[in-house]
Length: 513
Image 1 (cartoon, one colour):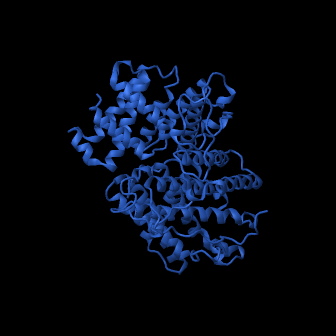
Image 2 (spheres, one colour):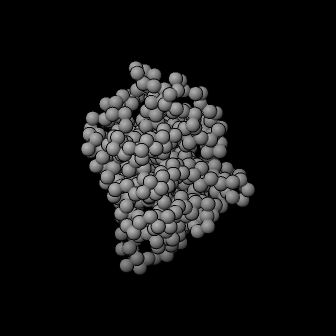
Image 3 (spheres, helix red, strand yellow):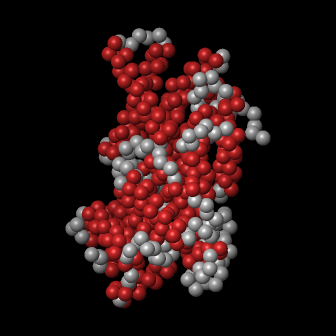
């Protein structure tokens, strides 16, 4: 089943070099030592360790499809995707044969990596991931990973730190996949005191250490920088998602409290993780760092969109909700600006040409959510005239920023549609997104014609009605149930350009006290 050792070693290197969301859950120096021992006597390896090895080389095969396809072609005549699925199937067999339902110290790592591999290849639904992460978290609860290791006996400093990494990685998956599916997160009902892992390099840790070394400064970039801050934001995002799905409408004070928590955490994120640096600056660009920056920026803006979107449209706009309407629109446009940035970065010759695989189904859902928010603003913006407000009240933005008209908002939607249309030429899975943006733009144009006093032909009136129904259904799915929109892994690649600046104030609102 295993390929020759040189191939295995190369695929393992590809896995760790890709810096996937779970690679910090495997201590690379320890795993390298275990690999040497495995090749000396393969029969001594446990089934759980074999499962970990197999899922790592499966992931390495997947990542090599983008970074080094020629290497895979030289390895075997079997298609790479078939090899990938074969390694995954073998890893699953090893987990089952190793009785994962009675978890031991080596069970959670391969299980969590297997869930990640499932997320990366599933192109239509994340239901399997939702089910698997629920099982994984229950296994973690049985092992006590929801309690910080200092509260438990007989756990070494090294094992305790790895338990922290595993627990918070699983929490991230649960929050994000649950929201993506529009279903409750398991974490809502779990009380946990497991602290975030420390900002350390793997070489700072060893199995023989008697105490953990002090964490490196937040300003120092390590393999844990991204997981730590993603977990911190995810903890608040979980509260935002829970509030959004609540059966009772929260008070505006509760919304403002979460908004302040989001901003407080974002304010503590190191500055180099909050902005994607364009190549024009002359600063060397790391594709892994760019993907991680994008991941944090996207999660931050998605949190703001979901938190404030209930106030985007009100029968009678309430002045006290002006802040929420502005923040929601700002966050949506920021997401679409970064969609454009990442698309350009992943075109041929771009900085992310070989790593576009990282933009996943969650990012696609985020882009469509953002597009729907901008669309709703454009469709309902004239409604402000009915309440004695002038047309530009939606766009009273910060004078230092560049969005000053509804025409520019339309251009942002058109740009997003162009991106979806471009990537859908090579992968039909993006056609649904293309069609959704086309429907939005068509509806906007119909309303513009109506506002100019033009009469639609009967057949166009019928089309208008049908488009309206489809739009309302799409908006309901996106803003309420969070169901996936039948689009998945975004593998687009290119040259970076400067990100769109932040937006101006949507409504004039006094500073928050």
